[in-house]
Image 1 (cartoon, one colour):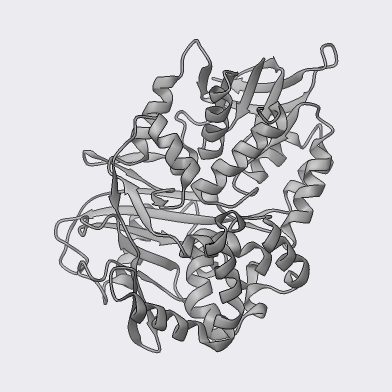
Image 2: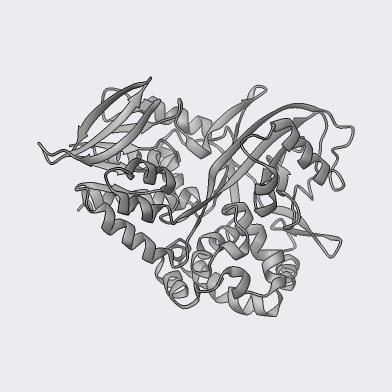
Length: 437
């Protein structure tokens, strides 16, 4: 058996990893020149830095198993240490000591209504981490009951502004009135975790994946853009069409797995499977711009390493790249105001300057020269799912069933975190290949 995996982001890498574990030969197709997708790395001066997927939760069991197989890289503590403006005052939230104090502060930010509604959800996730993903049994019930409301309607304004929005804007690029209660468990689970990051970044893992490729079980085809997926009329197998260096070609496989974002898969299926493409387009994605900037001097203090900004700002978050990288700043632009000001045509220097202007009253940015920066704008950067998302996924899977021996995974299946993508990939491989005895 030979299987094609389409998309070399984290979902595609996870799918190829689980297939290779079962001694199944895999061709991994990636349209860009390098695998990695939204977790890809770039060189900043002489250091590799990551744009996405940087923080690794202590409960990321599947991803940590993958990391051990890929050379067991070192992790370093990252933690949660952030702040926000509440009625003109800077309020800090930290998991570094004073836990009871910070718990009381978080309860104060939630308000009574927020505590009453969010506590049962948090308790369920803490009891069973498997519930903290899209489509879990618990949150499916929440969706069936409450997804006629947005999160902005489901919770009081105080909780929405100070607790919910900092989470949805960071994970989904979406405002609370663009998100739904039944999907919030995948975000809440992240807020209930503690974090490390790879000491040498995701680049070291991507290099290990490339090292494992070759003539044997895993072949990586970078720069190959898949354009169609259908069943071959002569053999009944799955045929894909692709373009490489301007030349169109096809290949036939026993099984095919898509690990593309929903909207990209919709484009591939548009001609042969218009119903599936139409359903996939109901899953919303929002843009995000990320800049990582190296300054001459330290910008942050160790006890205040980040800040989230409210809905009146295009800058959603500014933070230190790592606990010891106080001169290395990560700016994230997402949300409704950001969409009106930042686009794929914006100049990186202007976007960074906007971030500096917003953040400078709170951090040491004035008279602190930039030394270097890297920047990315992703038009389909963050997935915000849909109302009663589990029902939409059921319709999508029925439509995708028109292509025999084909299935799809991705960030819209179980959630946007790396761990959720690994879980969705494992479930997809089980579906296509069968659960091992």
